[in-house]
Length: 89
Image (cartoon, rainbow, N blue to C red):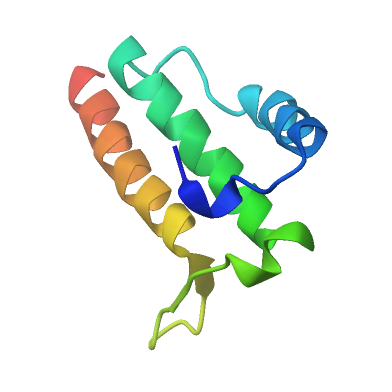
């Protein structure tokens, strides 16, 4: 999914997937669940010592919050998902 991690150890990727799967709830539609998991894994790998060379960061000028580009994309998906759930409530 993300070519910058092709050199990552398979065990590291599998462990990261296993660690992140629990954070992706069934509230996500099947069509988005793998995308959300992929972004969580990429964000986690980019923050790891392995990912230091692949890390792409965005700094929010107002809050000084630093995120990877994967975390930024994930945040946008989560905002839209939360808004959709709120409309259903």
